[in-house]
Length: 463
Image 1 (spheres, rainbow, N blue to C red):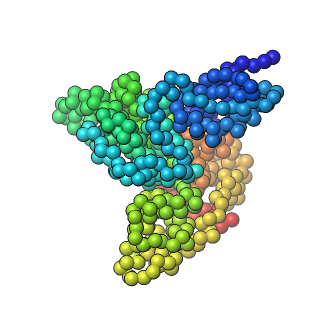
Image 2: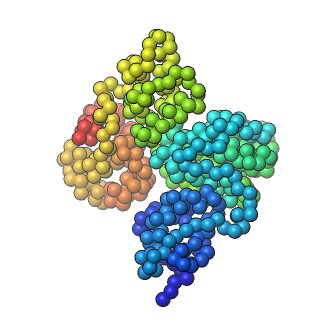
């Protein structure tokens, strides 16, 4: 039986689920339509040129293999921007790992309705690596077509890894393309305070008009601060609905994904997940070196820091991007005050407070232990079996070490709560949250318990 283009594309997407996460398929592929199947090529539409390039680079080879297997003959999967989108004037799109146009161009002048944005937070100043590739790609897609594709756009991850940078870069690019765009950038705490003031001052009508009527691009930082604040969540819910239904773009940041924010109403969790949810993780060594080089370049530093010193800093400081960049300035000031040449020894002196005592470079670069290794070490130290930790049993002899293993998986491996739950017998994320919180609490008040956990952590680091 000969398959039609639409049937083949549908089966290709089904087969892709074996190799790609569902979120990737829904974000980049599921909304695309098959155009034709001619001369050994399955032509698929994309909403814009950025999505076309992304799909060609990331997925074309895998999809071509799947299409060939299903068709029983060679079939290449190719992408083309939908005809109706080709009529629109195209912006100068960002291509990963190449200089972006706005790197050298002066930041656009923001319209009067915008809150202050950082002029340095543009796409051209953002360094892309494996840890933030998806979030950066989605941010560019949002900036190219605000309110059309990924709405809302939710970015999450630890402090200092570039969430605010990406969010503000979207605003800079959108205003650069359309200077009349009305941008409103606020922190969640500011929104909370304005709601409180509005309730007491009876100015809620003015507040709602400002947030719901006079905005085209709504940027909210740190939405996890909404947790447990019922009145503010109610106001935010209606503000979100009003903007979303009007086709306005919403961009949110948080230190954790929507489902892991305690005290957040289910209806807000649901809405935050409507569009695109992307995370930013800790950068790897090569990414950290690239960030340091970019810092030198964008600050036009007169003193060039040798490559071996940059590598030493990148190997020694791994907490977040913000602290990593701050090390450059501190090192240069330290060298200037002491009239010394920049070297690894000088960097070790200048950044002594950033480098943990006794922690050498080789140890830092070792691969992280697996979740199975964490379970094995904890189980042996607490006199149980790894199988017991993964079981459904809730006896105390298993519950305590299970909670410790979950805590270490979260702390050392930076695994998502859902992943940890699956590794421990399919438990839900709320159970993992409870376990991590309980261990953290006991670490603070029980020195013997803390020493025992530290010993397990030490073994995992040195194994």
